[in-house]
Image: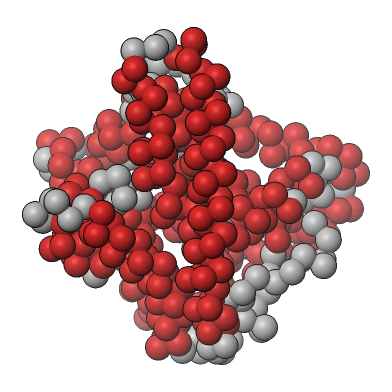
Length: 391
């Protein structure tokens, strides 16, 4: 991607901008979109089915959320890592102002629209108010506002990460803080292992809710932080070494990327077979491998000389990345109401696939158009204001 790639609204002048990361956001939202579309178009669950490692990226496309978490941690942790090394202190109030301006304007509109459209449900207003303050972090999904609220759980988890992240700089700045941080990390690891190896410790409902929280999704955030640390400390040296390696320059980097993606596909293949909920309950540690592999993908895309770089980082995916937040909040109800009516007609998928593919294309175009509008009208004005706030 050429250096002329425009800097999107919301990025402070002092902050670095990487089109590769924006494109990876585009890939992430693409996976989430295709996952939900697959479920609606086919009309059946794929539990117990074996798919190819490539198809698994669609049938277990919720892995796109894991990639979103890795990217979020990679980007947001850098100032705190630099603070921990003796760099400028990150202003906590400004950090939270920037986060509020990033997620709350569009999310608030999405919640209000959901409550208005679900007015016949007697608990819609109360549930909407709770979701607006991310109380679904504790209560789980907002069932009364489905399908609008289907993806809101991940925003609640993201907010939990925002609240915890400022502790990173504090922990790294002193020896005492480092020991306290290590103790907290080891305590989390021990608790995670206990939950994973003793299924009867928690009810399935509590176990599932915990898996969707910061506790359960910590591997993704930790992998992103680790990748950010590696780039901050050794990024230029690694990039130079990779460029000097003839093997890596002549396709070796591409081979490594494909190997990592194949390994990720094999994990997602098993997730497809078990099902999302069963995986969260019975194999929560799979997130660790999944998150590490996504972090490696990120590092290869950023640091390695890839011959297929333009297939990964291009205008299509940077545009999807730019619109990813709007697409994320908009796509599920459009897919649900736009495509779900095709499924109960009793026509087998193989016969009806053409009609469903056309409906999918129309739904995608509608999602993209609405997202462009909500980005321009709702997101962008607040992103411009966000960019004016110093770190």
